[in-house]
Image (cartoon, rainbow, N blue to C red):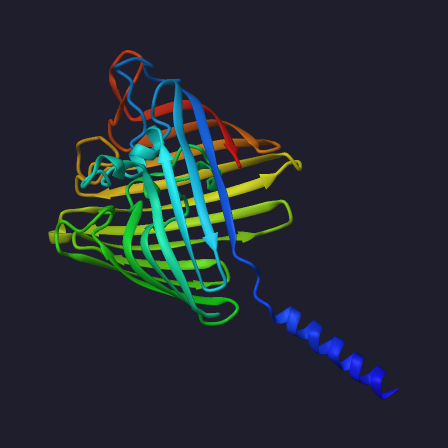
Length: 339
């Protein structure tokens, strides 16, 4: 009987010890490719074409997005991410990167991290911005074309940030970084400071850059099993009262079937002074942009047809007769494959 008890205790101790063993490190390779077709309804589709003043998906006819390859290593305490991009969308996303070498224009993100404790994580390197609802990779956005708020906010930062899990629902991030989008090195000697406070999927972001100040709210709510509402609002002010912008966007999305989702982005964006985002050349212009996107999932391939209507307060576009106009209608059909 004693031998049985001893063997039982030894078995339990061995099982408990095995459960406490850390998970083995993992190396993963993932990414995506995307291509699209774009055409205007209300403006020419030749060299006279004028597209919305937003980033990506702005090339006429059949066009390329980017190839994105992400290598990552995740250990118990440390890890890294090497995120490389190739193609027009990638080049536009990292427009300030080729400062030091010809190879700099393929690095979207490149950082290492250390899990100091279960509630503290330090990250150093180049990482995409923590502000805004949308991101660079088309796989993480519902709409294929991007918003004015995303396009005219920061894209990426290089620096050191600390993430704190204060509770199950509450988080805090603080960081010091180079000037916005100066991702290879710091040519100015000035630094930006950022912070993010998160609670239950809602995030308040602040960025104090050498040339501007931005505050941003990003969040969303699952209103039912099939209906989701995303929200983004931001205010940016340039130094020396040189202008800026403010705006808000709503992202209602409805799962029609297991493979088809319909979503709308409704965005209002206003310039303070002649910020230059909308393209009117006039001070205090504004624009209302409505983008209706369908998303068909076929295994790892996603097909996205999209209709977009931009309506500005001042003449910012041209019509089919090359006359100035306040509105622009366009269509995009995108194909995105992720792996």
